[in-house]
Length: 190
Image (cartoon, rainbow, N blue to C red; front, side, top):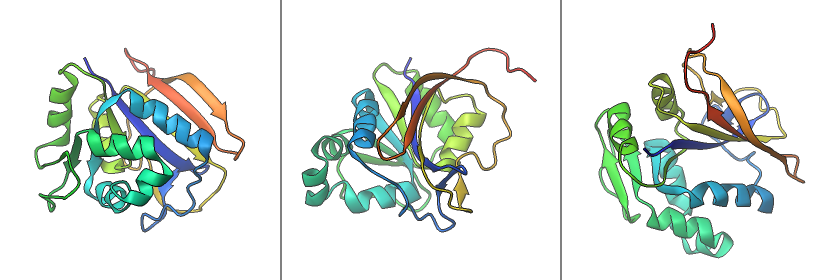
């Protein structure tokens, strides 16, 4: 069975994007990029929503991305991308499939296949659906050393209480703290 793995950058106050989705406060350094490379090495597909896809498609398929970050740009190009959207149905970015079926149904089917992890990037509404359906297996966050005051919370609407087990943590020279949690299976304490 495949695992659903998330990778998110968060402000200290829990936002993964500003009120209008802005991410200009994200910090990327070599240590942070290596954390992303490690997560990406285990993946054999990427899941995104429309907004995340549109942001990613502006950078990752470009020659500039390949020059700046060849490994991730290459993986973003070659891995199958499953994009949940009610409005998009085509893209020039290779290996992209647009899906309109229910998120949980599609991911539940994908988890039952063999292969590497299913990597969820951005897309808090998709995360909330998968979280509420108990389909997330691992949560990776990089806490940025900033308080943004308001924005889009990672778990905005979910009311599901779910224990996690810390599996790895690192503090980078930039002040970013990376955390990797495994979702604890079994009864959830009240």
